[in-house]
Image (cartoon, rainbow, N blue to C red; front, side, top):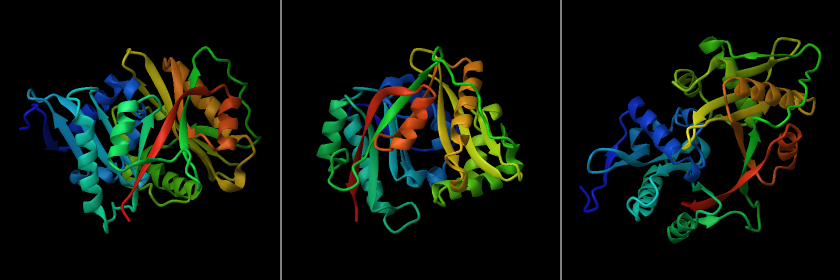
Length: 309
């Protein structure tokens, strides 16, 4: 037990996963990811429980957590602001130690990234003290993100889909392998796995009608868009789109836009007060797509990096 009453304990599975989501949503204004956590926390990173750390107070209440999200090269975390003041620094110290332990394993990377909401000055100070550097103005490949917001009262463009293409929900676990094959092709990455995707279907926050695919006339899968629904600190229902992608040979035909409009309509029917989406600030085509259906910048997100090569 620490003098300040905060104890670090190991990750124990699904019950802890739900507690982690609840903590992030209770402090949504301080957390980059809170709506789409069921997707992110279903990844294969927690397959090794040592990749997750939880901190509790003297009464056993969760006050912080962190995950070495190997599929994203990102350290995801959430904590109760100011309890105690050095808790954030303790999270970063644990992540630093774990990053070094993971070198040479399937979970290890030569660099790790942390997302921080613009305006979180104390977190930025801690990150810089811990050796992380902001990527917004680096000479090569600068990187920062933005959180976009689509309010419920914003007008939606009329649905438009090329003749012969059909938008429909994923056909349960039987279609997961086909989805995974498409996801890997779209993002040119092998990070997505069948086990990960199937775990998302079993999450209490999963809504099958928000898990959308677009099918081409030849009945092959052409794209996907998954909507998530959560509750923020004010008790509002908030949606998020994550992930969204279209096959390379079928891009620039309005399929991504059609998927977005359909997802927004369905999230509205679910009572969402608005819908979030996160993207790179420098990705012009993506920002143009989101703006074309009514998304606007809500908040900037700094990306910090630390090298372990």
